[in-house]
Amino acid sequence: VYRMHCATSCDYDVVFTRDVLDPSNRLLAEAVDSRPALIITDRTVHGLLGDRLRAYTEAMHAPVGVLALDLTEHTKTMATVLEICARAEALGLGRRDPLVALGGGICSDVVSVAASLMRRGVPYIAVPTTLIGQVDAGIALKGGVNFSGTKNYLGCFTPPKRVLIDTGFLTSVPRGELSGGFAEIVKMALILDDELFEAVALSGPELIRSGLSAPEGVGETIVKRAVELMLDQLGENCYEDRTLKRLVDFGHTFSPRLEELSGYRLRHGEAVAVDMALTCALATELGAFGEHELETVITTLRSLALPVHSPVCTRAAIDEAIESTTKHRDGTLNLVIPTGIGHATFVDRASDIPAAAVDAALERVTAAAMTSDTSAQLLV
Ligand SMILES: NC(=O)c1ccc[n+]([C@@H]2O[C@H](COP(=O)([O-])OP(=O)(O)OC[C@H]3O[C@@H](n4cnc5c(N)ncnc54)[C@H](O)[C@@H]3O)[C@@H](O)[C@H]2O)c1
Image (cartoon, rainbow, N blue to C red; front, side, top):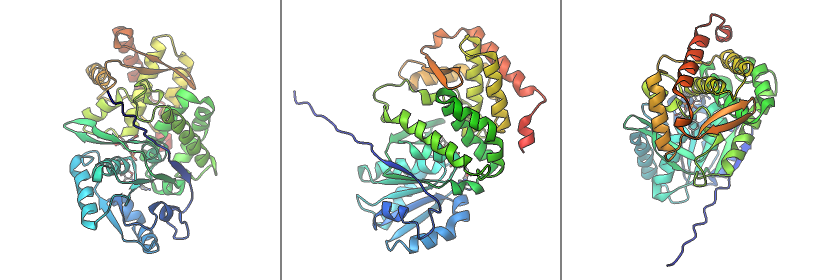
């Protein structure tokens, strides 16, 4: 028997910067390293940043192509990945020539899949332009596309070569999308950091109204803390080969099924918020999470204009989600539940959750969604 030791590395830098597309900011040019490259973006982002991007690429003195795609959950597919590969091939990109994802989570998801396939792996640089991209999708290793009705069924673990975060991009992101980003920040805060949770509860609504520019400096501090927490969690288990028990999966047990069932009308961050509200209510039913804390979570989510329930979140949908998640986590549910603000634990098996607790939790979130005090409306 000959044993082969595969040394896999996944070191990369997540760099905070401002004016990333100002030609005087050399960070992106340095990451591309004077090589031919393909920058992939979505049409909306291209409409907003196309002129700046053109000026930047002209100053890069390298043959850099730009591909603006129609990117939605419906086009987050292999067909889009192949379109990226075809353009890269037509440009003549070589083994060490990078793809750059300039856009939200859908953009980084499809670009990292393309990068993992081309020549069995070419460098991929992420420049996330949404809040979800900056605190989650764009800083992580996972790429994915939807396949045959299942969200992220096909995908890869592709560490980016470098991530550049410019919170200045967030000023143009629609409020609804920023709310979705805050769902992912609430996720990290609820399981790991009560101070971050307090900061979000206090300033989140104003940050959303202002495109993260007010109160001054608070947005960047919150984004930095969320990034730090995420990298810390991912670092221990980059390829998910050590364990499928991950705290960062909080809010991601029921949400994929809810997104699928809504035909992707429920956006990712909204589905995560609905999942978190239900899971917190379930934790309360199981005696792990206080009534007062549950109320705080519901109020906070609503103040961020996030839903706490959705019509697609039925008892049948919950059961389907438990079944498909258990398959995804190799036979164990590993449901992350909070035990306090900033603390969490796991419920390993579905059989550890009494059916009556699920029904009662569902009733709680349905009732919470119907209360007339919609602080969410105040925000909009
Ligand atoms: N791979 C991962 O680890 C991971 C983690 C979290 C989420 N995700 C995935 O990310 C996706 C959600 O990401 P998202 O919320 O960024 O979605 P998205 O990429 O669809 O972007 C949301 C919207 O914002 C627009 N937009 C992007 N940047 C903008 C800007 N600067 N100004 C104005 N508009 C802008 C986009 O055109 C789009 O309409 C989901 O598919 C989810 O599954 C992946």
